[in-house]
Image 1: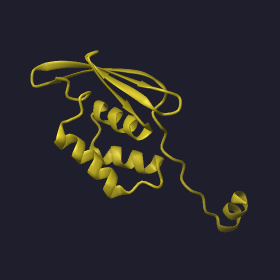
Image 2 (image 1 turned 180 degrees about the vertical axis):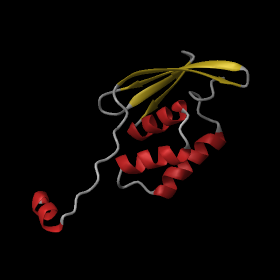
Image 3 (image 1 turned 180 degrees about the horizontal axis):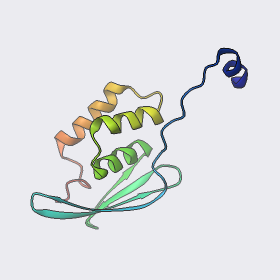
Image 4 (image 1 turned 90 degrees about the horizontal axis):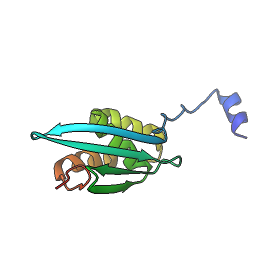
Length: 115
């Protein structure tokens, strides 16, 4: 049925942006004169875990993995927002942007701000 609509209407939904590939990603970031080592492990189902300095950890749903990898890669909020909206079609742009901005302002993520 889907192919029929595509053929009749010439409509094709764009492919979602690729999710973060499964694997282990390593980062060494500097902030406030301190170095923090991050390891982001991404599972085949898109979920993941972020470990900071081997002392703090956070588990993530696929949306959190995309956000965390974007933050660690230094991507702009707009790029991360587009990546999320492309992958999760039911996501609201306002909610996604609020989550991104709120995360950066709160500073309460123990994995991102190890104590």
